[in-house]
Image 1 (spheres, rainbow, N blue to C red):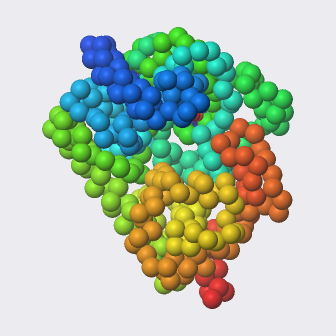
Image 2: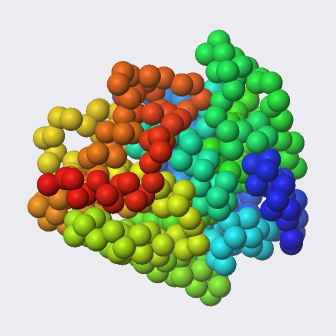
Image 3: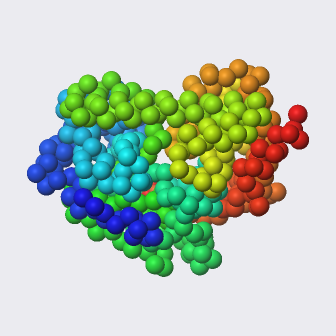
Length: 408
Ligand SMILES: O=C(O)CCC(=O)C(=O)O
Ligand SMILES: [Fe+2]
């Protein structure tokens, strides 16, 4: 299927019909329901003393399965095949590759959002963006405007679903003053210009990550909505289950895993070039990481790397005190879309190497910080001493590299 990429880039979202073809819908539903049962057993077993018997299934406003993450990923078997392969069809994988303008986009975190057991009402409007451990919004906007998104996210409901609202075009701009006023007054009410998506079972909405969006109502009405995305930047904790997939499915995950390893190597090369103060090698490594991107793309990746450098430093020196608690908490996980390859990535470097590249990135880190703690609504970061929106003024990758000479 040919989709309207121009419209997608402009509005930040697109509704695609029959992402799950009608003749597969029943099988995909049944497969996901089997996974819901498995996850409910896990939640019941993990419940805390004060929780109801079902644990998170009963307490969460949006009980969510993570198919590609432990512990559920360790339990996938032949029964899960239609659930996983729903990601591989032409209208999911093919359309995602078209929209990302890449030959073979990889499925990232594969999830399923379910209805809560009791009414929880609306969530808060937000962008799926936590600038504290990734980058300021403007960095994303500039990169997307220059070369399109690096990641596209999907909601693919298996039952009719109108929970999600979006603000068209908000992926390419900061919040307006009016939006900030409304969000501070009541983040759980309709915003001016908001559009409610109206999806039939099997249709999907695909959107560009920093778009302002809203989970407008979490009620006990049956909801089983596939959620997750596609990118060239992925990390798979466990691919053991892929042996149950069709040959084409196995081949897809094998290609994507090889690509992930390659991207991790290019990330390592970039950090080693920084240690060596080799500017051309640093830029060459970034160009391998995301071929075809320009200055804005390289700058965004450099900001991502400044966070990775923090994560590695923290792994080598758990006692350091100068990393704010909220940043520290996020850095412990993985976030491949922003080049955080998880705790084990630090093992590629010695402590001395980690200290050396920290020196190279310290100035940029300081430029990303604000003087006083600040807060802007509509993000997944609370009040913080890093910029929510603004990138360093008049700053390019060449300035980052020039800064190495002045440093020790
Ligand atoms: O429920 C939805 O459709 C939106 C969910 C969402 O935005 C989120 O969990 O980040
Ligand atoms: Fe979200």
